[in-house]
Image (cartoon, rainbow, N blue to C red; front, side):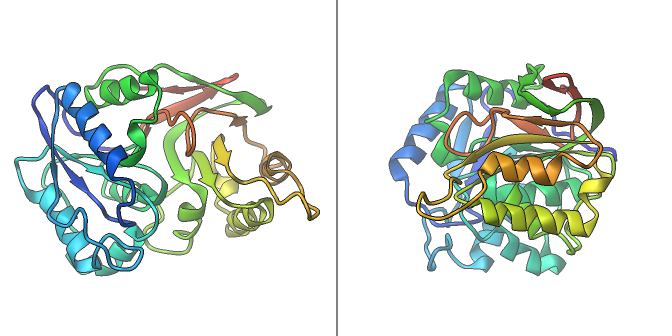
Amino acid sequence: MTVAWPAPLQPGDRLLAIAPSGCLRELDALQAALELWWQAGFSIDLAPHWRDQQGYLAGSDHDRLADLKEGWLDPRYRGLVCIRGGWGAARLLEACDDWPTPPQPKWLVGFSDITTLLWTLTRQQRGAIHAPVLTTLAAEPARSRQRLWDCLQGKPLEPLTGSVWVPGSAQGPLYPANLTVATHLLGTPWLPDLRGAILAIEDVSEQPYRLDRLLTQWRLSGQLQQLAGIAVGRFSQCDPPSDRPSFTVEAVLRDRLSDLGIPVLADLPFGHDGENAVLPVGAIAQIAGDQLQIHWPA
């Protein structure tokens, strides 16, 4: 797969903040993130429907899609930054006849529920960035924020170091994802071609039996068996209740991932509730020993 990447951002470039998923609940965190982007030299406009609410969604599907289209098609904007995750981005795919394709590659930044949009862009041969949303950015350590600015400006990215669960080496396009969100793309036209890829997974608030269910579906689909390697990030708030029998999170992940005949590198610093190191979606990555190396700039 050949991915078209946007030109590196320059100081003064303008981006649009959109809310394609859940409604805003963290206004102070959003304001802190906007200040950080400004300090880094970039301007961010808030999309027209950024504070809408319709149930748990950030407004209607029509309005959230309209904001996405504005960011893609308005030449003033060099990219889009997602405000938060939650749920709702996949609903926008139902409007496939009206799905916008940027005339020129533009940056898209987000994670968690935004996995849907990140992966959809790669099907259009466009790269995207798995990185903190606006409502989580201020809680990131300084090195994580600097990694985001470096990535968007086309500077090299340091390798990430983890724990070797299954030794070996692998190289292929990198597909970071929230496991739950990515699982719900299985069997849909929006799933990228993952043959020979490195799948990087994280999740939050999923008990071990649910993770077992998700990964078993991946195994039954045959998708895991086609990968070149697997990178495991943080699975936060996933411990089982203390009053019922259960496997641990690590035991489930090892059981479902370690017999595929491909390298597995775990304990990498990305995901919810902690450092969320930037991972460019579609970039060529390599598992080598205890490191995930990314060939960036692409």
